[in-house]
Image (cartoon, helix red, strand yellow):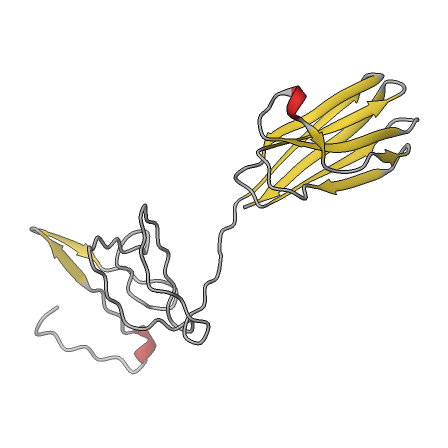
Length: 190
């Protein structure tokens, strides 16, 4: 309201709205909950550059996410640089089943994308089972080898085992003397 005087003794009731212009359309400028300007609807600024030079970053005020196909950076130094891994991928899978008497294989997984892989199994049956974690470079039965020693899991008990070598595939080998109900979980973190 140009040329209008505003008289109000309560400053907290005085507000203003700022607009930007996009061609001939006026659009309101957005701010976050701290009153800081939002520069895009997702608060992400996309930069495309051949040689990108930026000031020294400070963890107190800067946060940067880099997505790149071929990223070349200078050697990092512990005295001036720090790297923090964020958004580590986490996956899980579960199965509740009755394993038949004999040998059954559960939760065969391609573990190559993850640095930490573990399996949990609960024996809900009335007799013991034997569980062994197996790994292989390809998902073919003749290539699987034991990555853990056989573990006895008595009725109403649990077992956790994890891979100890880098390999592409993993699975649980379950040996049962009678049909036994089990619940098994696979968990992995990138």
